[in-house]
Length: 149
Image (cartoon, rainbow, N blue to C red; front, top):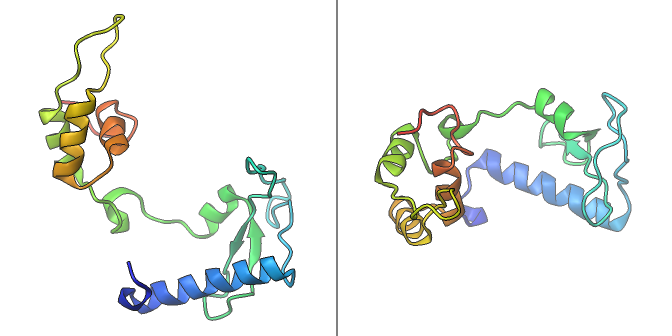
């Protein structure tokens, strides 16, 4: 989505995130290695960087006023709805049920059913999601609260 097409709240959020990234790159902000709430170290990223999040606790109008939190504390401070309640999901419960109903697994190889690449690809195109999303839905790794068909 283009910046000009974003809702005002999303634009201010994006600008605040950019301001933090720029300040980190310039050294005017330093990302700590411990969470300000629980004082636990955040897990390291694969490249060795700290994974502590900058939480805009005063709002995005104050882009550099951030509280440094681990992902657990950040989720507690700023809970977000999941699945279709977030407004971001491409699939809903009905689509998940349809995917599971239409899915045809590959023949059993080595005693285990494996997702069929051609079937997953066709469903991915039909529902406008990635092939890996379809695989996670049919393996019940995504939308696990749904009953498999």
